[in-house]
Image 1 (tube, rainbow, N blue to C red):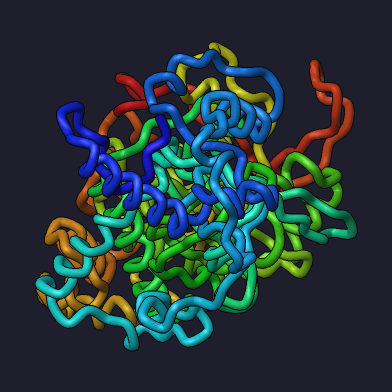
Image 2: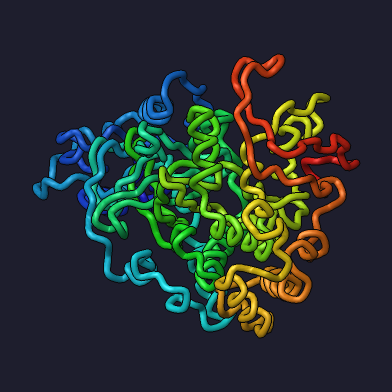
Length: 523
């Protein structure tokens, strides 16, 4: 039997009079529940009601696209109620509100409510000092409010499906950005994490378009084909908090132009092509220029890769990124998190595995930093480093040209940091843990302590000392030795047992194939 949302079922022992009153209440709810009215159904706004969650869970999955799997299964298990079919229509002519729908094919965009604008920090107005939290108490209060709304979109199966609805604030689509770069068009897609990256657009989005990072969406991972588990709320909040903190730290270190602005704000809309209703608090991120280094290595011709990394990279930017990675204890700086434009302008993204908040024990892991696992992959290859192959790579990766030693005088930085970095380190050296927490919006003393300890180590003992000895340290199983830098490369043809041309170092390249003992994955 169809039951309006928010009404209790009729009890078996009620008399006739009470029953009539219940029907009156039922009629009123129908006329105020959007999708539940015949007027909406007759106009084609509604696809049906729901008999309950259990039946939906027992329905076997269907083949086809994600959209067909979601919409078809829900429609079959949500047949239109006979009560809905028999009701007379209303006269307002409006489609149902998105809150009264499970799936919705088309959602009309409305202006963002004034009361929520204060939570949406516009990236165009961002300044390192403007949005600082005053103290940890205010951070915790806001954290509790955000936590209540962080995964509200996960279960709407008890509601009917709608072909058309209203009440959305953002136009959403899965991340498929068409990017023109290096004389061709690339299609940029989301990464391989538990989060899903959506493209949001419309008048309610600063700049007209931005990315939104969300967890707990029932959408299969593009690479694995499975729906990732929903992480605990505290992990999602930590990810958002660390990302925003690093953005502020980078601003103080003169690197605002290299890191996309991010902010935490509500998102409400329907994903185009899926009809999935999304309402949550997400991490918003500005779109960066160019394409990832991963795309560059896999899609560009070898001559283009050589020209870009040999002739168009700003050495000061490389040195600053390397210093920042050491300062924040960055543990996820791989080739998908580094972007380059046609002119060599570099941008870096994805900083939630920093400040000691990583999913595994790690001090630093970056393609810019020797002795780290991701750097050593450039020498010996991923499968060899992860102990899944007995054969190291035969030729060096061109990412070795990003070794920070190749971009500083004498191939050693010591305490000779770029001026903006040095000024930033000096500011941090004077801070207490509580001051750092307040300045950068941190709620964990551990994160603030990591930042301050590394700043002091870099100023007093230098870059190389901090890589080796700064806390937190890399575990022995992912701690590699210093290799000789490979700062200039040539293209070689007809490499033995290789189908395409490859790179070779102009200097001696003879990396050690001896791997540290232990599990290289979980360390």
